[in-house]
Image 1 (cartoon, rainbow, N blue to C red):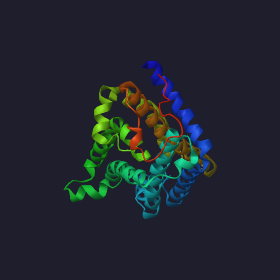
Image 2 (image 1 turned 90 degrees about the horizontal axis):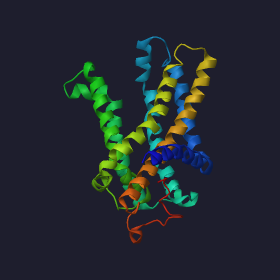
Image 3 (image 1 turned 60 degrees about the horizontal axis):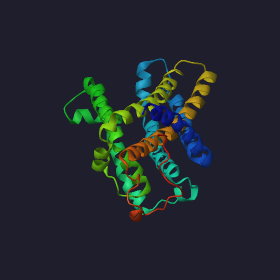
Amino acid sequence: MTRAFFGNWLGAFRDGWAVTRAMPFLVAVMIGIEFAQHAIELHLGFFSLDKAVRRAASEEPLRMMFGWPKMLTVYAVAFFTTRWLVTRDVRATLRPSSQALRRYAGVVLFLVIPAAAMIHARAILPVLGFGEPEVVTFRMIFGLFSLLAEPLLLLWFVNAAMGTDAYGPAASAKTTGWLYVWAFMLLFVTRVPVSQLHARLNAWPAGQTPAVQWAMFALDALVVGVLTVIVPAIQVRIARFIADRRKVELLGDPQRRFEPLARPSHLAEA
């Protein structure tokens, strides 16, 4: 399993590059949205050295206007990346069935709820009778829930993107079983370093010269583009590995599939 761990970790980056080559417009859209948001943030004072100015800028409606479209774009990129990694066919990837769209909406809902809770914590907590001191704890609870639950649900994520019903959330978690630890660790080492780089590139421009700031904005936009394809890439690889170890079909009974596969789906390293 150690060989499979590192093989799939490296493979996720190769898969991300393959997706970028096959569908460059997906990554380009993500990079463009991220860069545009940084331009707005700079205009609003988000990269000021004054903490009060930064906090006020972070809650500006103009900045928030980019937040949700960006998140929905992330989910869309994950949807199409997942589909391409299963089918290896651009045309099939970009022509999802109604079942795929409907079922993946459930995945998006699962992802959106904790994200919305974290983003709007300051607005939600007063309604619940809490205040500013509880904001960090509130966000941490929802963030940890997402982080800890995700490895159990990857078979569901993949099947939802393909429009198949072999695995819902419960069946996905049951099939994953003790492989959860392996899946969690692999997700962690794939996502967290890149996410931390993204976070640092959001902090480092504060107080820098315009030339340095714009260079960091460009680099961060590229990092976000990478992140949006390698996360679904590692999710697909983990789902395949779990299916292989459990000796089950990744997408369940072939007779019940709405979308034929362009090639076999079990491609993970053993």
